[in-house]
Image (cartoon, rainbow, N blue to C red; front, side):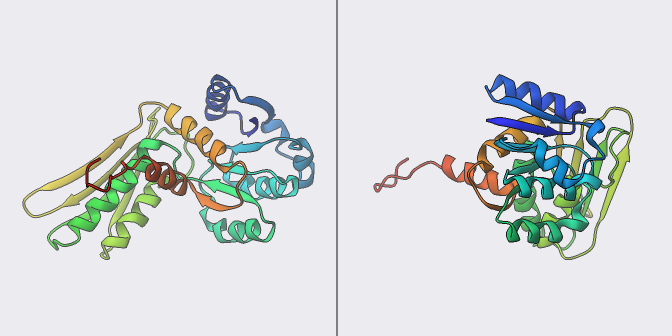
Length: 243
C-alpha cells in the first residue's frame, strides 16, 4: 500500500518503520508545518494514496476526515479526545460513502483485554458485594485524561454493571500506558491489568487496520476489525464433533 501519515511524532515514526518492514510505502507525511492547511488543500496532498493513518491532535480530526472524504481515501484514526464529535463524523462518513476506522487503542493486546473485561464484568455483576473501578496511567505528555482506552473500558463495564464507578487517571514521566479494571468486595479484590511495554503494539494495530479498511466503505471501530480476525481464527468443528 501507499500510506500517508498525518502526525509525525513518536507514533508516526514508529508506524513508518513498521510499514516499510511490511513492504508498504510511506508516500506522504503531513506534519506540524502543514497545520494551517484547509481540508481542500490537504485533500490535494493526499491524492493517489491508498490509505491515511492519523496520529495527530484531536482538533484536526474533523479537517482530516473531510480531506480524506474529498479525496475518496480511507482513514485510520488513532487520535483520541474527539469523542464529542463522533456522531457528526459518523454522519459525514455515511453521507459521503467514506471509509473510516478508529480505535481508542490499536493495541491487539488491549482489544483482547476489552473482551476479557466484558466477560469478567458480566460474571461479577451477578454478585452485588463487588464494586467496579478503573485506573489508568500514561506519560506526562498525553493530553486527554482519562484516556480513550479507559473510557472504552468504562463503557464496556457499564453495560453489565449499572452502579456508577470511578475512573482515575495519572500522568507522569514516560509511562507507555497501564490500565486496570478492579472489582472490590468485602472479603477480596479482583484486579485485571494490561501494561504496554512499548508503543509498537499500537503501531502494529494501526497498520493492521489500514490493511483491513482498504476496499471497504463505512464507519468502523477497531473492535470490528478484531472481531472479524478472531472469528476467522475459531477452530472448525467436524460433523463428528472433533476439531
